[in-house]
Length: 286
Ligand code: ATR
Image (tube, rainbow, N blue to C red; front, side, top):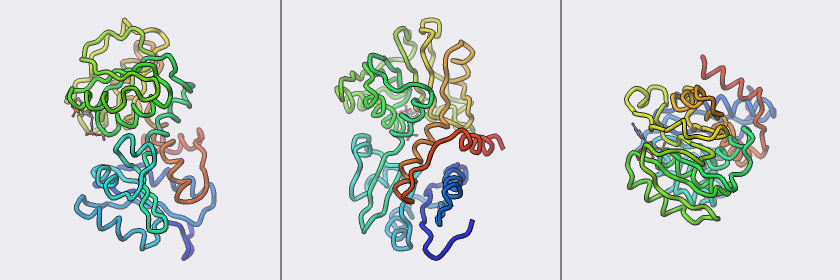
C-alpha cells in the first residue's frame, strides 16, 4: 500500500479493537479499487471517545465505524441520523462531512444483504422468531419489518427489553411484533434469528444456555440465521444443521454492513464477492 499526502482516512474505534476483521475487509476493497486511502484500527477507551470524534475530522478522517463500547455514545454525538439509526437508536457508522457528524446504522442493510445472499429477498407472509433484544436485535427487527415479515416474535432472557422492542416496532409496515417465552413450539416459523452475543467465541459460549426449541415442530423450509460469525458455526446453527434445516452464518452481515460505509467515506461502492468472503474466512480460521 502506498499513500500520498492526500490519502482518504477512516477507521474503527472500539475498546478492545484488536479482534476486529474490519481493517482486513476495508483494506481488501482499498487494494481492489487502487484507492489512495487507509482504514485503521483505533483503540479508543470509553472516556476518550467524545474527544476523539471531535478531533478526528480535523485530522482528515472521513468517518469511523464504531463498536463496543461506543455505539450509544456515537448515536448521541451524531448531529444527524439516517432512517435506520433513528428507528433503532443505534449507530455503527459515522460520516464526517463539512462539520456535520452523520450517524448511520448500516447493520440493517448488512442483515438484509446476508439474507439476500442466502436467497431470501422478502419475508412477506412469513413469521420470524428473533432471539435477543439488545442493540443488534433492534437492527435485525427493523430489517425484518423492511422485508415485510408478517409476524415477529421476540424471545429474550430479560422479557422487559423484549416488550420495549415489541412496542417500538409493532405496526411498522404491516408487521406485528410480540414477545414470546422460551420453550415455544415453532410451527409456522419461516426464519429463526439469533441476535444475541450468545455463542461468540470466548464470550458466554460455555455458560449461556441456548434457547430451547422444539425442532420437531419446524417446517422443513425453516431457516436459521445467526449474526455471530466467530465461530462461523455457532451451537445455534449446528443444532439446526444437524436437524437438516437451512443455516445462514453471520459473516455475510459483516461484509454487507461495510458496503455503504465504504461508499460514504471513499466514494466507491464495493462488491461483496466469494473471493472477499474467502479472504476473511482465512483470517477467521487463522
Ligand atoms: P448488542 O448491542 O450486541 O445486541 P446488548 O445490547 O448488550 O448487545 O444485548 C445483548 C443481547 O444478548 C441481549 O438480548 C441479552 O439478553 P438480556 O437482554 O437478557 O441481557 C443477550 N444475552 C447476552 N448474554 C446472554 C446470556 N448469557 N444468555 C441469554 N441472553 C444473553
